[in-house]
Amino acid sequence: MKPLLLTLMVMGCTCAHIAQTQPPKEESPFESAEAQFVTEVIIPYPSIASGTVVLDAVLSDTGIVQKVEVRRDIGSITEPAVTAVKQWQFSPAMFEGKAIASRVPVAVTVRPRVFYADQVPLPPLKPQSEAAVQAEFQPAEVIRAMFPNSAGGDVTVVLEANVSETGKVEKVRVLRDVPTATAAAAAVVGKWRFMAATYNGKPVPSRIILAFVFKAPGDPVP
Image (cartoon, rainbow, N blue to C red; front, side, top):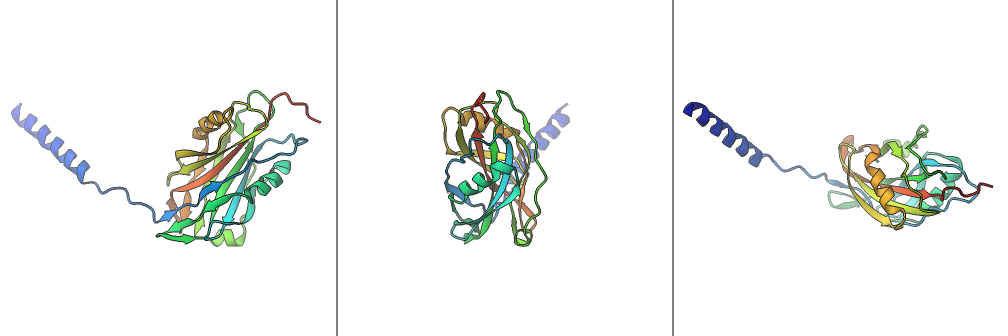
């Protein structure tokens, strides 16, 4: 009995020692751009479209939006989404402490005018530009999107999600708060799925902007 007890004690000490001596998680030299100012996304009243438009905001090394590229397109949603994102402001991405040009993915989801909605159908991605294909940084991609199950009138909530190297959401920051709708938008982000961003082919933590446009249910459609 005593030899067995001694063996278990030794094993326990060994495991504890290994746990204590494991090296800390290596931090990525890449730091994704971060949103500093956002506006609402105004969808024209006659529009009855719903779903998720995905854009890439192409940023300079000072964080200025130079252009917006469309990755997933939905008719009457895409143009107002692009117009809004062009006005947004960011801090630049950093690599080894130096500001660099980069991209920030933006998903604009317009909730349908119904009381209950579920998974968002995602149309195929548009081909990337040659510059985007050759870029060292490839942003995270949305592979599953869900509608918030709430309606808060014609309002826009904007969130910033930190996406890990494995594609999991680790933190959500509220950029544009609407008391009647923010909680519903934040709650559904955990059901979204992402493909992690990469830098020179290696998965890295990154950020993605998620804008949710709530349309009041029961509104008459012209």
